[in-house]
Image (cartoon, rainbow, N blue to C red):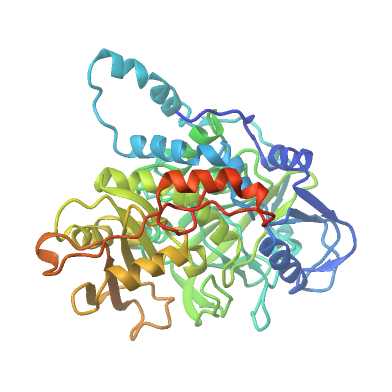
Length: 513
């Protein structure tokens, strides 16, 4: 169990207070436009690993003043993502081990092991939600003609976008025939505002919301949909975690927060939502009503093509008193999703090691749109192992389904150091032997480089030291300085009148702390 030395953040305001106490929030009091200006300010601050930004006077896209502040860059650093998950950054790997154990629990090996796992059982109990009789999220209720999505200060992030966009919505759906929150899916699907009571929900076919919609379509029924904006950080981040479909995002949020999540029944549809959310939008999606969505800027650094997606018909909007509107932008990394992905890499590694114990490390470079390139380090022990692991990662792990370049290196290479990875590629691989190419395989349909939408190729590079029948030559012996010499020079360095010395690997490369 990771040591939790942070208080439970029951809502967005608890977390905001925690950040402000640590100088991680900047309040901007001059008027700023929701059309492009917030995005430009946000991306400059995020690039420098700056604070969360609370815009107190926002001019909406229609030119009127917003009646609520806008919060952006909430998770713009790995440290703030870790805090939102309830741990310090150094405890992220331990949290990953816990999530891996919950996903694939192993039977205890005797009484001592069972007692050791007792904290895990207690953590699982924290995943069970409880129902609140009343909720801050429903202090203000608007029905019928009072519903107006235009009252929200949704931004227009990039030039050429057609309408304001809800960029941090937690879209809550459930399958037909179930009333249990355990069966609900919570996903972050952007929403284009079409009018006072209509919005497009852009969920891709493989996402949980789209799967639920197909189930309601088969019955010819409207699907109830709730959208929470500005929940507690554990609930927000649970929607971004690489969880299997059988694990509830709401339940995991309780595990991360350290206490049972509090839900409240919606006022107009049969769903439950986080009781402490800032804003909740309630409505239904018809079986076949769609509208053209986009173009909008995406995490690839390009505009998406215009495509049809389902339309949400809004029945009610509820909110807290003096609500805070949570927003972000997506664009070429670094953006907020890429920072979150960088933190989640530490959580993802234990899942990988359950399938492939020989994996020493794995890195999804955020500048490669978080998942399109992966570098895996192996404790190699037999010929062909790198090829086997690459094929396994592509086929067994949904998070790597769309990874189109996979580089395998030995465990002595720091996967987060691109200079070391390129050294391994240039000295340990040969194109005639070490390339693994797969054609006509599923690929991210947003990848405009692929020859056909949703179908492209994958390339693996085996940049490991070759052993046994993998080569007919004796492999080169790596350079290595005597560790005693390194230690002796370290001791005398301050007497040489030189700048501070970087830490060195025995072989001469820079050591990554």
